[in-house]
Length: 445
Image 1: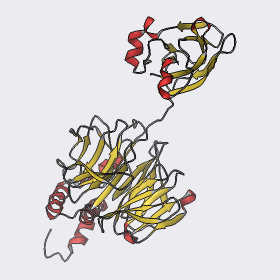
Image 2: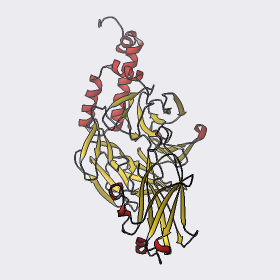
Image 3: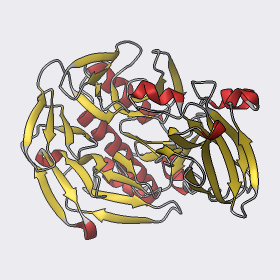
């Protein structure tokens, strides 16, 4: 452009066209967000170089690709300014179309909706599985981390006011806690307590289910950010300033889970297999860490990934059991169950192991256990499907491979693949013997 034309740089940018102007607004928003989040100069410089080198038109094009209707259980959603990216466990990346310019906190619900905090517009957007979008909260102040409580309320780390806000039905806002310096991560435990990482004071704050605020951890942290609970109830902390992942027990005892291989970890989660997932801001990647410490990159080439969330797992009942006294004649132990294929599944594809347990009950302090249980399995028409006395007499290999083989050879088990329907398991005592027995059904697949 002619330097004597009299236009300012901003005027020239706008006159070049609204699309180009929007692209640069997005770029500036990216830079602001990185400065706001990172606290290491070398990381600031590295990230800003990455951002400025990106073609702006790619940013806008990323808003036009298909939605997340085909998300799989365990897929990861991560803030990747200025988009949210869905990452499959095979490393595939898909940009989620939205109008969000500065995505920060993300969380998913059981219905497959994604909630995204948009820092620049001080709002939270919900993206449904079909790609439709709606605003669930406005009037916030630099919202960051998100979480859901047990009642489905949305919890927001409102960084601009150093507070945590609850968004109820209809968008009603309630302040849960104030005075939390730079709240950067949220996680709820099984008892309804909320834990907040306060990066400004290098601490973790606990907000009880009754609203009481207390200090949970006050030492040994360095810019803590993302939080998540593992299956054992330990709180995992992405300690971004020390490049570590810490584990904090319910009593507050700290252990180091990961001490090497990370560069400014900002988000943390746990998958259904117990692996730790880390949004590693400095390396622009998501890293999976197995229980033995093995680190595997799930995806690389992201732009300052921060918060992450996973598609909700589908929980199902896999075992049911009942115990009773087995007498003679009609006074036997009877257990009924219903098999129904999952939505989209095929008939005759539900495999179960039915067990009759007796002798091993003595190890649990049960007196007078049934010494030699016999097991019978019937369909809803009263037709006998199978019978078994000692489980090793037949189907030993299938039962052992199932992982639920009885521990005593005199106990019984039946391995069966069943179509949808109602079934009955009957336990008797061999030779008319009596005693206490347990009848169980395990879903295998």
